Image (cartoon, rainbow, N blue to C red; front, side, top):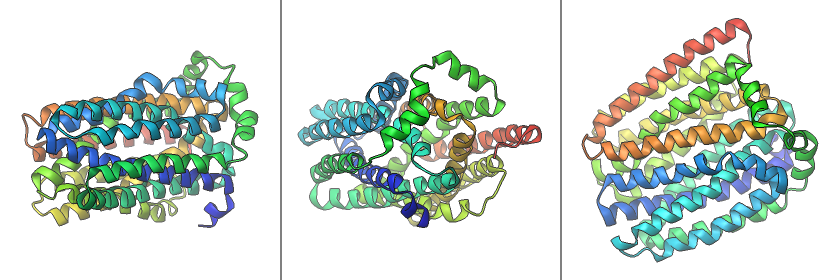
Length: 400
């Protein structure tokens, strides 16, 4: 808590992301539930989630260039306000013939996120004291946890009691409130100009590529952005399928599963702070443990037990995420961080979207539990592969 109170500018960025994310989760729970009600097809869920990832391929690389011209603060404000207007379209979905509105609106909202997310992440090092890096990245996981707990669980309850349109309305308000917090950040433009953006406007794409290929660490991290989301995408689709189809728990079930994921993220910093070194090794060991838990989930017949297991799984996921982000922020030169995070988001979310689309297709052929078992094995395989790779890097030179 002392870190959050000391870093005043980051505190505003934190709360804007929290409110933004909570509203988006309200909308996601409601839209996925509405899709399954109208289409009765797991493929529609896969398509929608894939459409939410596609813009990162199309627009992610533009985020650093747009931010260089407009300033990061203007990009964050603009994307929040525009997404508030786009979110209004969900209110007009009333029948199966209107499903296309969900697809289009999901794509447009994600387009805004593709610009917003890399700019926000690259702003963090410019707003904080370098010594606070790991603690702040822990708070990023806490934020994600609160988004899932408050957004998904409350969204499921509101959707169940008052209907999906009430959840969509909350999403609209959340974007506008988040924009108000961003508008109160005073130093983001000055900090960015003096640290990251001024040299970034002169750099070319081949300069970033040269930096990446000069280090086996960066090559490893970017390759993980390609492969690990292939497993993560399966998990994302199966959460809704487990809740609504495998266990008939409806909107509330989706909210419960996402909220326990949130609890795991909130708890994770308590473990992250205990790790003083060898960040990569601990991160990939956590990934292996995630895979083992997902294998167990695929065999469990109790919804309550699955909820508990997903919560435990996310504790390890939150630890791994915070450690990997800390390694990147400490090792990538700050003038390249905007471009690096844009490239990382583009690669990772494109891979994630492809995985979710394919998972939707596979659900027409395979049982959810079979895909869940394959998901666990993929996590174990990737975790083991990158654990060995990271061990070799540490033998050469420790990155953290």
